Length: 312
Image (tube, rainbow, N blue to C red; front, side):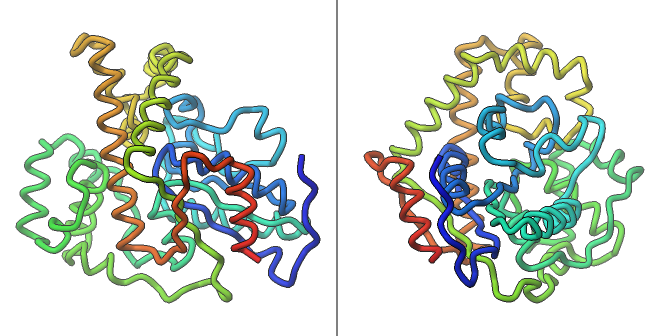
């Protein structure tokens, strides 16, 4: 393990590492935390759930033994989790890490969590369980039609492949009588001063595609089907958020006999590539990171060293 560098004036400020799935964030954050004397805070909306391990590419128990990780495995499948909870728990983790003289290193691909932590949350209402249940029971096309009619601006910008986002938008509109896009515009001014450094890692399209395909193959080889089968016994399909995790929904459909395993593996690769593209688009439009394009020939240690140099 690399020895931590001596602290500098800003050595305890959080460092945020974002990027699309399979870009290599977790491995790089681990090495950066080792060099800085840091601890990792997961900014991943799916890794909070216990049992969603292979499909979310959680850090191994060995890696978590090397460097403390926060906000992983903190919810059961029966529980809900949102950006407001993330901000509250992340801030608490930051304070605890800094109190020990260490550096908080955020790592993840959930762009909304990064924006919420950096800029605060708008004044949208809390979820309404009864209304949420009714909306989840509606045909998805009907929800899209309602959003298109009541808030064209939100309809144009929203991820139409993500039912959870669409349901939340319609829920806010019904609860407040205001357009969802209006609430999305009402982010509070930055809550951090000085602003933590935010890096977004990228790779060339073919490099990222190769890494995604390798990751998906490894997930299935390590037992994603068996993991999903076990999660079904624990109520996976009752958690609409968890069912949005790419891999699990497709495997559930396979277990129901909707498609063969080879076709399922290929579909997960396609969905993952599409998701990575949406992540990058979100980071470009919603955040203002320092971009770092990683090369296939670069070692993880070299990348971590370059990040460390950029931080200092």
